[in-house]
Length: 368
Image 1 (tube, rainbow, N blue to C red):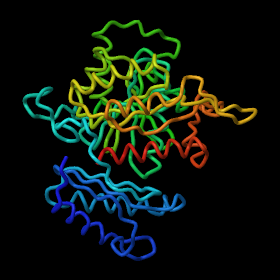
Image 2 (image 1 turned 90 degrees about the vertical axis):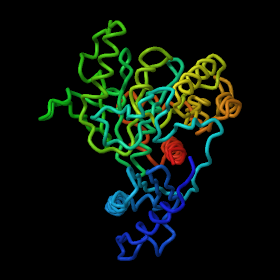
Image 3 (image 1 turned 60 degrees about the horizontal axis):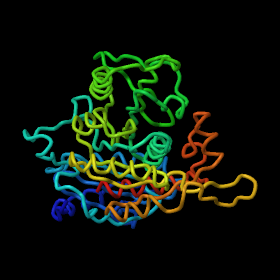
Image 4 (image 1 turned 45 degrees about the vertical axis):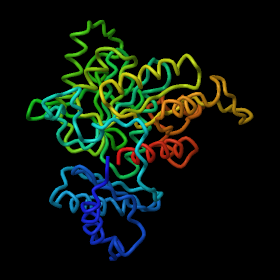
């Protein structure tokens, strides 16, 4: 999508006047990076050191308010990042209807497909896989936490009706409360707003539901949850490419999709199907994550490519979509996930925490 140079200049001018904690102005520093405006939406990054995140939270809020007050800006997203990065180039195969425009092939009326309860969400991103068992839910949670660490307001919706993993991965207990407007209130965990069907039924209940019941549950999860204002909502998609996936893709204004795959050929075949499905409904592919890229031995530290090596990166290149990065399989990741203590929250400066932070930053660049 072409950048609006005039609107970008206005956004930069507004941001330059924002006061910093030390009394200076944002425009007098080199902290302001990657300001991009197009089609009434603007994204900006403010470079900080990791230890400055708390002090700069108010700066981010003031910057976002200043942008949203400008004429011609409908949505604004300001992130705090430890690295300065240039705007990402357009993916070669990004559909013309991406990021804020409504594809005519899906919705001829041109009206927003976003449920009213999601009106305060700037970007909705699907994390998907063509098959189960590739670590999609673990990736979704840690991506969401990586985005949260950038200073964004982030929610996560577990749309995997048959195998909800969010309560376990985030250590959530109990049931969500109902608000005054009869909408469900998301639960909170590690700074994320979260909702899952797993919070509404007993964990040992088998979801023996036919298609219409699944579709109804998904509709309620999207339209009857009081998400409030969010910069990004991550949807942990059910595996596969059936009715449930299409309902989400066509029932919301998805800003894009992230595809999770392991390096092995069997997983890559299904990842291709997922990419094809999203392209058919004009949802841009924001990137591919290669999960379980290798196993790190706990005894000797050696790397073992037990599922093959580099398969997802090569496939991303072949299909002309961004490669966000690879995540190794470690005992730490498995243990942390089982305990409901995600590595990105508990050890953000560890090896895995830094990997997920990098994935989140590259994902955010793709949303500009």
